Image (cartoon, rainbow, N blue to C red; front, top):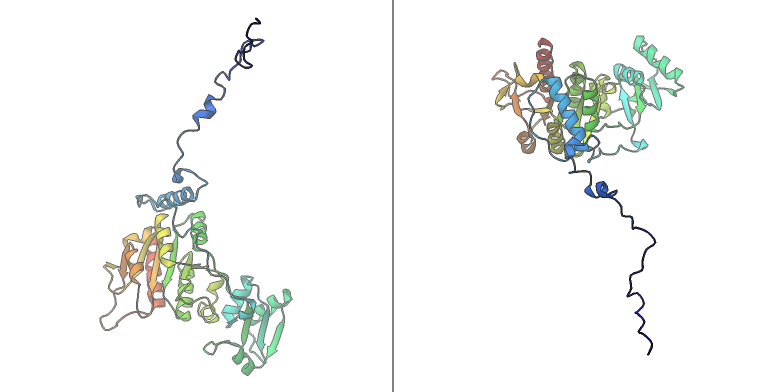
Length: 337
């Protein structure tokens, strides 16, 4: 009887030589790269960038750290975009000799210059006409009644009007980044419910005069940079940037997370403006609306609520004047130190 044959595969085949293993070559790959660094320790992460900005601000102001920042590096940092500008059909008219001249000097992309017939020519008018001619800008001579109809009813055009596209708002984070890069103590102004364009124009002018880095306006229930604001700013709107925040409270929190101190202006504040202790810190000054003042949420997020001492016979100060007085005192205290 023939011997039983083994089942196929039941016998281990003999190799021709010793088997070679990995020798541990892949052991390091299996071990990994260690624990994941914290978001604030990663320079490319937005939390890491926020930490770097905060550290620089603390060094500039010689501050004690405010405490740990939120893990996302500020809820408004790049996550909320400003409102889109208007269409070209909603172009603004910049009026007044100073405002028109400053806009042209700043190379605002104007589309037309309107000049009243028989205008009294001074040095400003000569420079305005020269700049417009050099750029090939259309120069239209119109009657004064026609110029009155083209410009806002409450503006004083002084025989000149410049047609400009809708204002392009910056992002609040861009203002902070630019201030940090310039290696000086940042100073910003935020408007909480300001609706009068003349107040905005006055605040823009004061911010530029006292070394501020820009103004922040909320997207809703707030005035924007209109022709009237341009006029009141006396052209400072061409030099001092205005940013738009989708949510003012979130922007305030983001600035605080990055090392900026926030003070609100209110007649009933518990801190007096003269000799303000926070003047030598990176600052965001919040100005309340003409009637209601600071909103509750904004007040809760301020590091200090500041009042300006005034005579008992005067109920309150105009928002533009209050901002000007505050910016002057901050500038004075910083200069003294």
